[in-house]
Amino acid sequence: MIFKLTEEQEMLRKTVREFAETEIAPKAAEMDEKEEYDWSLWDKMAELGLSGIPFPEEYGGVGMDHMSYAIAVEELGRVCGSSSVLLSAHTSLCLWPIYNFGTEEQKQKYLVPLAQGEKVGAMGLTEPAAGSDAGAMKLTAKLDGDEYVLDGTKIFITNGERADVYVVIASTDPSKKHKGTSAFIVEKGTPGFTFGKKEHKMGIRASNTYELVFENCRIPKENLLGEEGMGFKIVMKTLDGGRIGIAAQALGIAQGAFDQALAYSKTREQFGKPICANQAIQWMLADMHCRIEAARLLIYKAAYLKDTDQPFSQEAAMAKLVASETAMWVTTKAVQIHGGYGYTREYPVERMMRDAKITEIYEGTSEIQRIVIAANLLK
Amino acid sequence: MKIAVLIKQTFDTEAKIVVKEGKVDPSGVNVIINPYDEFAIEEALRIKEKVGGEVVVFSAGSDKVTESLRKALAMGADRAVRVELDGVAVDEGVVAEALAKALGEGNFDLVLTGWLAIDDRSAQVGVRVAEILNLSQINMVTQLELADGKLTGSREIEGGMEVVEVPLPALITAQRGLNEPRYPSMKGIMQAKKKELKVVNASDLNISAQPKVEVKDVFLPKAKEAGKIYKDDMAAAVSALVKALREEAKVI
Image 1 (cartoon, rainbow over the protein chains, first blue to last red):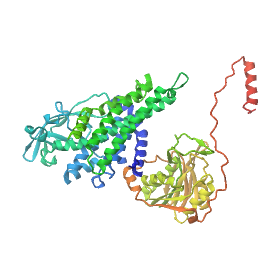
Image 2 (tube, rainbow over the protein chains, first blue to last red):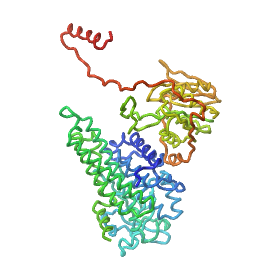
Image 3 (cartoon, helix red, strand yellow):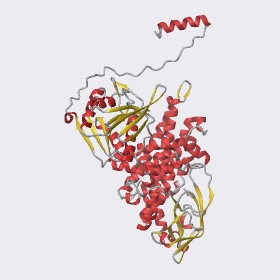
Image 4 (cartoon, helix red, strand yellow):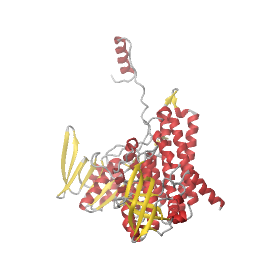
């Protein structure tokens, strides 16, 4: 085993870290406070090439691997959970299924501008009554001549309202439950496609989370992704990769909180010495560091397996489970080390602790990850 | 337009400097391109984007410098040359001679570099290279214009700005304010590895590379001590202060 990143991956990490610290970090608290993302940051990310990391150049990407993508998401997460999930949802949930299941025409039309960052991507999966249980989906798509007609709603959609292109999962044959679902590419601005309520959240407050409303929304037949009935399969494959992204986001949040806590423990003095001189603090720091490194290795292993075309869904679920629970645990400790100040918005660890929670929920709750892992063990 | 940029690898400005056995300990310290040299790279790229041509980056040092040259390539430079010199950075004369020799045959119209490196702050290499190669030079430039084969550089002087015009070929040293260096793009990072990075030795350049100066000692500045306040009655305090200035601080 060689635990070493390539020269390119190292340079990417340095670049994204510098970019995140210089451009994003100074804005993170204000964006969180206002529940509003500064989209000029997206333009800068696109200029850097972050919008299409793991896709070939012929499709507007930069031709790097998923390891590089995970590192970029991690580095954004280190300073801003909202920026991190923006990139993760865009890349893993929208571009990847189009790249993997799309026709050449669909790739040219949608993937190229998305990978170049001219457009932002999102995915519509969750519904009010269909969260982990995708088979309970109510949104329908009925073929009518050369068009599919979409009716129903999606909720909790990351990048909603701002995104230009949505991969939407709909039921084309409700009698077949999840096996009767299909995936569609829907453009913002299509008549009958509007945005409902904006969610006000505990964390990642700068990330756009919207309801998508489809009322007699007619989309061309050629916007079907893959074939009818492939919806569930596309979702499962997409979420496997998405979990690496969310795991990387969680890792970044944990690392960011740890870095803050370590620095604070060296400067904060109580009883005439820095608090890091106390074993109680040292043990917390040691445990935080160990858990972060363990999560990192799981994520990098899952990314490595994906990059080398080996099965990785078990490892992605393990990485997502461990990284998200690590993020929650580490950020809680980081707030503890900061004491009363950590509970205020004067220090970023308060935001990081709120941001961490969602990583245990979206793209498969911790409970779903355990089901996936156990199912793999018992099959 | 053929443009050369001279860069130096330095410690990160936020690095904690540790001195061990009379040397700065490089282990675990993040290294960067000297920030003033990054201004030079950025300016070279902007000129190239405007008028076309080639940007070649040069650096003198061991293999460790490769990382910084790759970053310059990722930012957009076309190729790089590393002059294999280890441990002579202390003698700017040798470094300047080696870089000047390496530049020698390149027929560069313009050479750009930072006005000083943030580590030793000697501000020697740029001006020495210009002297050796007999190039016109403008130092500490905060604004640079190229027109009709001439360069116009502006720099801050006591109480105002000075505008200096030089013919090409010329050497310019960059000061903070010249530009805002770009980040290497992901595409740039992917391309950097495919670009040429040539290594030349002192013997290839026909120079001795023997430093003429020697470092006798390296030490950190003394930690700042807490100030002392004299607050007895006025006459006694003044007398104690004067005594301390004379005997302890030895400044009067």
